[in-house]
Length: 326
Image (cartoon, rainbow, N blue to C red; front, side, top):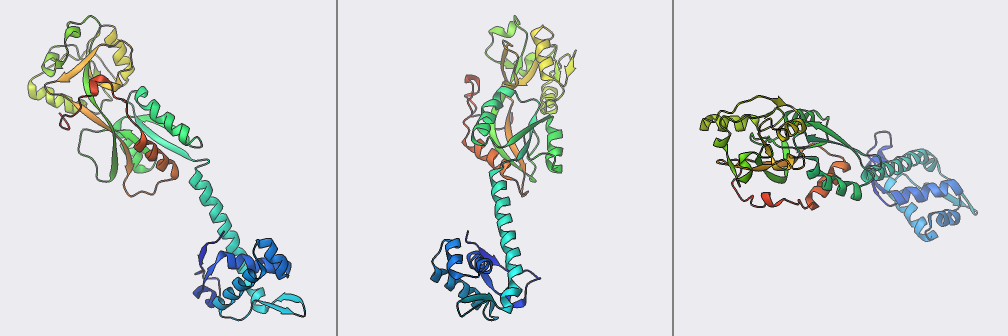
């Protein structure tokens, strides 16, 4: 290992504090301290004896305090300065080796844990391929998935409880956070099998007027969609509501009513749905981190995987070249 050392440690003599030493120079000197023999020290360091001698001479010149080692009548011994400097150099070498080992372990994320918040309205199937890529490329990362509503994930991310989060919000993006768009999905109208809407290609927002509408409490777009309904004079009937999308979808399959739901959030097989239009509503799902916050290698690995990932859109979401929002 050869690394530049800026020896500005307050505990060292002033001559050392002014010097800029190389790790190999310190290592060669300590090898001579251990063996008191230049030939054996050179063999231990796997260098030629002239190279080892020159390195120690350079070290002595940087210290500007005189020789570190005396060679008299075939015997080698440390000078007073050499004995004074030896414990400092041993501590520096030990600290450098420990720092390098720590950095390597950290970079490898051998025991790294990634706390990833995942918005509860995101369908799991949409994320499986991404998480599989993370596992395959970085098997040493221990992933903790923490489920929650968008507002909850936002608070946990800002407070440092989460390393990163995947969510979206209809309000303007917070400048304190960094948003990396993952994919965009349109909102659908989900309804019961056998409903008259089955033969329709799309469903207008006005079609929801007077319909039994099951409210998805955890949906981050609730207020947004309610405002659009109010603007158009659309007044559904609200017989049921739940924080859990799986309950809402199961009730719809049993004929309880309809709801608006993001396309990839539909998890019940066979649940009929059609794109919502007039207006069309969609959301952009993002990987979110705190801007300017130092992140560990596990977050870097996730970002790397996200940048390489190709999202497989369904045919219904292929025509997503519409303006952002509604």
